Amino acid sequence: MFKEFLELIIHFRELVNKYRVDLEKSESLTRYCLVDPFLRIWGWDPEDPSKVRPEFTTEMGRPDYALLIDDKPVIYVGVKALGKQEKIEQYINYCITTGVPYFITTDGVRWEIYDTHIPKPLPEKKITEWNIIDDDPAEIIRRAFVIWRINKQRLEAGTPLTLQHSKTVTEKVETVGTPLVKVEARPGRKPLYTRLIFPDGKLYNVKDWRDIFVATASWLIDSGKVSKQDMPIKPERSRIRYIMNDKPVHKDGSKFKVPKKVGEYYVETNLSSRRSIKWAITLLSRFGVDPSKVFLQE
Image 1 (cartoon, rainbow, N blue to C red):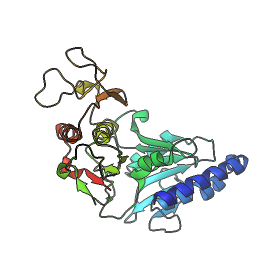
Image 2 (image 1 turned 135 degrees about the vertical axis):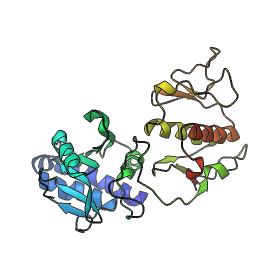
Image 3 (image 1 turned 90 degrees about the vertical axis):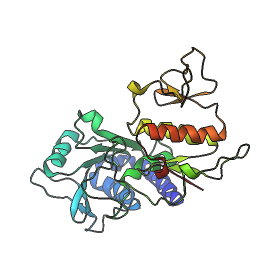
């Protein structure tokens, strides 16, 4: 899938470079050239009425697309011509009134996804975003994974897809791989695994053992399970050392030996292979995530 997705991103960039003026003038052209193919690659085929309904009519208005599961809308999509901005508040109201949990706004290049039912101000309803032109394709895949339509057993209508609403994650993927709790670290050897996959389907690349711990910390932060009030975070049976802090300093004033900034926080990455696994499991367990549901894949 990555190769196909990469080719699509390259194609999009070529189209935008060649036809930018036309795309900026035409919402229909933007939908046909940029939006439809992107939805299709994630399982939402615009030519299949059981999955996608364009110009979906509601009592409140008419979203450009409704994405369906069992004939029930689960996501509304609002599209504007390249460079234009949708009236997000209006569509959020459509979603709330008609019971649709998610809204996507896009101009074909910039994509934003909102969890409409999070009881927070509009800016905090945004759960992820990406830019087809500016962002790395691997990062786009990682963020866009929340809209992957697999089937009704794995994506249940009415249950949020959010990356930041920790209690209501619906996006599930094939859990083929080795559970984190069963991974045997081999000192002196690089891991055989290339990626780490979390319960919401979010993927992180793995090149060495420390990446497992760093990815775990990053996912917990991105998913809203870890916040500033949780700082600092200590490993088990330690009084002065920290796993994570809002500054790269331990309780005794000593600095992290190999600090790495993750979001707004710092993690200590001066770790052995076994400790990387142990600390990742410790973090997950501490914040209510079953580490047996996190998998490493080759």
